[in-house]
Image (cartoon, rainbow, N blue to C red; front, side, top):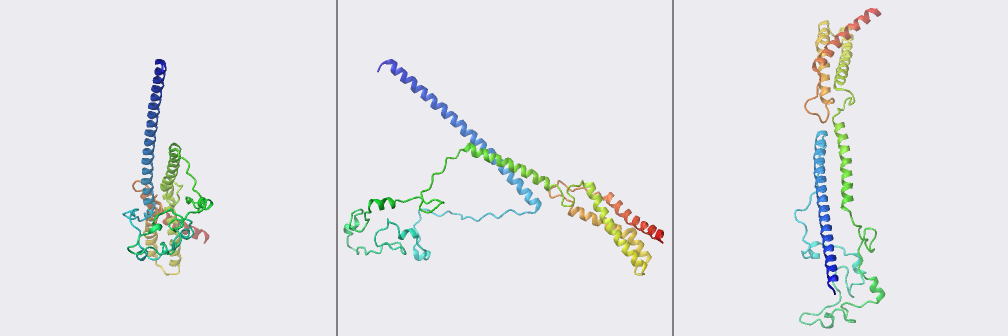
Length: 305
């Protein structure tokens, strides 16, 4: 081999080495990017889980109980439990009909039913596996031997060879996880918007809701006022009691009723601080609506009279 051929071979080896280094650097950068993306998604999902826990506690939903797991996993190298200690158990159906089972195999006990050598005697020819005619490992015809080859059990059916799982691309999986995280963020924002609305008149403003609640309580107090007026007309309630209820009792009941309704059903599930209840406005509505209703009743009664 000439010097030019050695030089060309050296250049080729150098090119291969540089290409290998470049591929290794690219693969290292790719793995670094994948690890960074996985860490970012992990932090995102952790924050989403914490936010969902806060939402659940805000709306009164308890967290699902975690399944109890054993503290110590079973030892795969531990000896099997004898049948007398573990209790009777049914052997697999394939053990009795397996072509690999030697003659005299008992499916109930898992031991050979053929009489073995007595104590102090040698196994003889039966101790040499693979010999024909001795009953230790019988030889099978070629067709049966092909049928007797062990097959992997798949989820589709028993006895069928399991298909090899397709290679998973981590970039595609991370992209799918990112899209699912974005969808979870969108649904979380919608849940937060719904949690910031009260159960009572959720689309109304706080001022309009307070006016509606206090006015409804004032109307209910007006109905009670009419009942008292009718009772006073037949002599069941005297004038002083009727005036006290109209001027103070019923307006106070309407005011406190509206206050409690706003505190119970007018409060959002998630809100910072205490929502406004507009106490002066409610006091004015309740303490003016009932006496004004009584005056309107008197005017209407006199006009019809």
